[in-house]
Image (tube, rainbow over all chains, first blue to last red):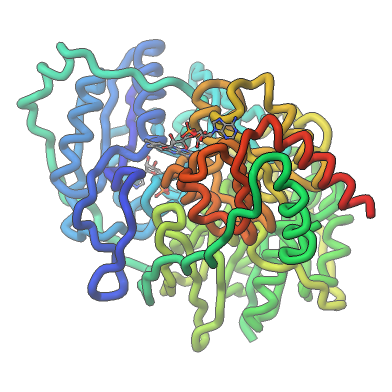
Length: 250
Length: 316
Ligand SMILES: Cc1cc2nc3c(=O)[nH]c(=O)nc-3n(C[C@H](O)[C@H](O)[C@H](O)COP(=O)(O)OP(=O)(O)OC[C@H]3O[C@@H](n4cnc5c(N)ncnc54)[C@H](O)[C@@H]3O)c2cc1C
Ligand SMILES: Nc1ncnc2c1ncn2[C@@H]1O[C@H](COP(=O)(O)O)[C@@H](O)[C@H]1O
């Protein structure tokens, strides 16, 4: 089985937002980076699929050369090949652009199944995996918390507001992974040593032209200063009074 | 006037609140609003959408649900109407359908928007970056402007209009199909859509104490229970309840954080709540910095009293 896991290099969740000098971007000074949280789950799902069904795992990312660090970490965990679609533009692409660039590469690889994260924690689109599947004309199951792959088809479970849905799908497919699907493994020391000097192939992505223009980027308005209404159970009356008479919620 | 098409979700013939909010957001752009509604009982739901500003509603009829087939049908409707814009609510279903519709229209998608306005004859949308640590305003040059709207941000407003309803059978040839749904017990609200969220953190000490959170939520009435990642990772609460940068982003009328320290990743997920209450025994906990009302003290003493007081206040 030809398996692909798509990962995105994003600022760590500790990163603070600071508006860039142009007022249309974020200033990345001082940021550290990581693979987006849900992409760890996508890679784990890919590795488990390989262990169960055979084949190989390609870790695919669109981003800067520096993403080699994150790709290498996943090679150390057991992925076979890493590919960087090297993007000259440091700001994030719109989801259509990204999905089309990934689709071209996934097609060339002849993949049977692609795992992505539910959402990347930088631009919060929650769209690239689903758009990728649609451009490929493949099945897609989103926000998956359980998966079973079979011959030419599979079954997945997804959590929604109304409950857990069971979905049957045809392969090839794109699966967007949610927390709860698995517990990502750590790389072994042996794995880390083995990939230390591995070069990661870089390719030019297909450029389909941006459809998004940034008008402005701002920080969220500061919240009005609040106050401590009291201490312990004795403060309950003051809190209820504030909710009722000031906030008008009760 | 150009048309904006809204994908409306329904269950048993009742439109989802988040979809009505989305219709109102569409109506406010000044464009002609059309709606498409799918699934069992879609015709019944369609009848009520005129009241929220839709002038034309297409009901896709038939049981069964295949997201790719639904998306294809929605695109057919969008093309027939010559829609210049497409909206859906950013719910689990809306987030599943909207990117497919966008890709089929070869248009990019602006997800989870918190504001939408006409800018010339185009639309501009405001959406969070980094889970709301920053807010970007964007325009799109896509052939069809596609966006999803965040639940609980736009107000669902009745316009008193009437819609022409057209029913037609939905496509059935999808590549993925829902075969069963294990419905959530009772009418438990989802954190993303509930007007009030009561969340518990590690300060609750163990899963056996979360009944205190549930009881307070019940006292408030239509409230959902939420959780910090620490307690979700510990297995005390399901991850569907996690609020934060790697959980759900919520904007309820009232957010109550109990025994939650207020880590940056948690704050990113709830800082746009209208009113924030924090209950924590540590007066220096960061959560107090963004709380409107803070109560310093032991949750185990405070919660039973607060639950009683809230229930009493609502009775009067
Ligand atoms: C990549 C990444 C992603 C993350 N994503 C998220 C996310 O999406 N959501 C999220 O919530 N976190 C997230 N986190 C975790 C976050 O950094 C914090 O660790 C977490 O939010 C802490 O949870 P907590 O507030 O319940 O626990 P703690 O930080 O341990 O706080 C417990 C609080 O309870 C108080 N307390 C203790 N006893 C009592 C009592 N009897 N009565 C009242 N108060 C009491 C304490 O004073 C303390 O403030 C993420 C972290 C990383 C690294
Ligand atoms: N630049 C990228 N390179 C590789 N995969 C990506 C990229 N952007 C998004 N993805 C994948 O799509 C998922 C959803 O991203 P998004 O739609 O941006 O929230 C991510 O978790 C990744 O698996």
